[in-house]
Image 1 (tube, rainbow, N blue to C red):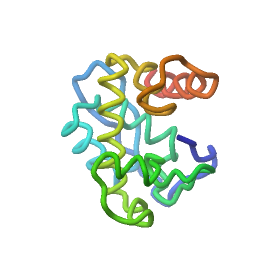
Image 2 (image 1 turned 180 degrees about the vertical axis):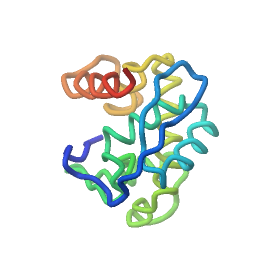
Image 3 (image 1 turned 135 degrees about the horizontal axis):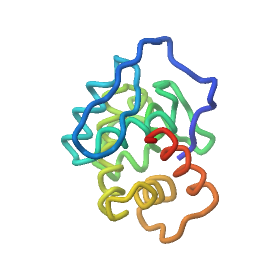
Image 4 (image 1 turned 180 degrees about the horizontal axis):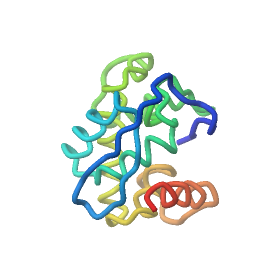
Length: 151
């Protein structure tokens, strides 16, 4: 999953701190997406702060982000990956924040389970695919970004 550049931001500048009892530190998100992230993270058993951090790294909360390999939206999910998670709409439909978060969070949930619930294990499985076994330089850098947000 490719992330948007650090300068890519959405128009919403208000931030709200996520709250949870998962043990993960708080990560900030634009108010407009906090409820969606909380709803789907909880529905799929993903620690809320980890979910916020992934969205931040993937797109910097930009719902119109487009990755170089066809990743779309807030969670930079590919249409084929979304379909694997049960999505039946068009690629364009993945630009909808709720749709993107719902199917991205479902994928992140499986990554979290397969990664043993650890931050870097989860990130490896989310970024490099559920079958990935070893950290590669891209996943290692991604995990470092997530950890810096969580700390």
